[in-house]
Length: 494
Image (tube, rainbow, N blue to C red):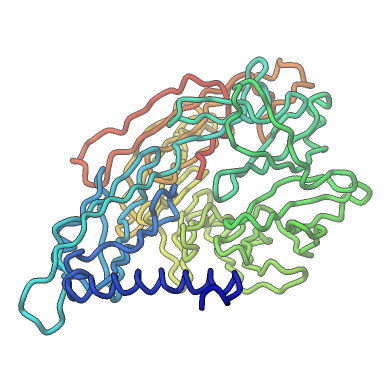
């Protein structure tokens, strides 16, 4: 009969016979073994959401999914993270969520292990099978920061210093002088303003926006090509900010032909720059990426990022927004106390949230230069000044930690002097980077490096301040370290 069949039919019948024998063998084996075969394998972790991933401060929880219901108490007792990361466990069916109390410290590799936990049989008293041991790995982002160099071939160039890899590299070409910069949220790129070095101090009026990768080149002296984001042909570009999702840039621009034409512009990838038709001074994009806080006259306007949109809210009490909390629900704002004759010449720091709370944290005779929320939004780290009783007007700068709940102010470090100090708090709260600029008015006025007030920069040192942990004994002093780097405007990589 087979001889009468076509070759393709004979092949088909042969394959059917082979598959039938294989299936029969599996069925016989499964019948002989019974359902215990599956059970003897034991439960297992089906998915670990952070497996082989690199996490940052915005990553707050990992998910562990099991293939069957588990004895939750045993899982919670046996799960381990090395190095340890404190957190809280919650459940949703077969999924365990571990939410960190604080961001994972940067520059570390972590292992999550789980063994000896059992499955759970609903309504049955007997113990379930012991799970298959699980081991998962992830790492946090490298600990790194960028700054603008001040000496030699580094002068005016953007430099990244990776502490985890112990590498330093120049990112921008030698013909550009960088004035300011912002990291994109993933830390993979930097947005910066710069002008040709040949223009000297006239470059402040010719700033253009560029972006560049933060990937370390193989040769530390090799710079990359910067990509132009916004030119300065018809408008002078001043202050700019980048949204927390990296999708929106807002720039303060002045029409070169008509200086009275002063407006904020919105720049988004793939579209032409658009006017916001919004007057005002200093501004910050809120963490939601949809609104902006702008100093307008005698108050702060909160506006949608849409051309010509009306203000959502107006806060007449405040004159400056220093920073937003990580989740965008609160902000640190300054009241200059201009409407109070008794408090005039003082400054007040307020905690303002979206529930209508306006809590005064501090009132001083001096200045409130900068304040940044820590990773858990429980404290503010501030750079303040104290007005000294002297014949000549003089302010003494210092760092302080402020507990938002109790309004307790803890001085951290007094500075001998300050000139346009830039402060940056690490995303994992490790410490505060700041610069110490030395100006020199005898320097050639054509020198391209200047402070925001136009003073020529002769040199600048970088410092790292590590505050004591919240649970430290009273009187514990912060650590202060001078970094072996010459530069200014340091910023931690997200």
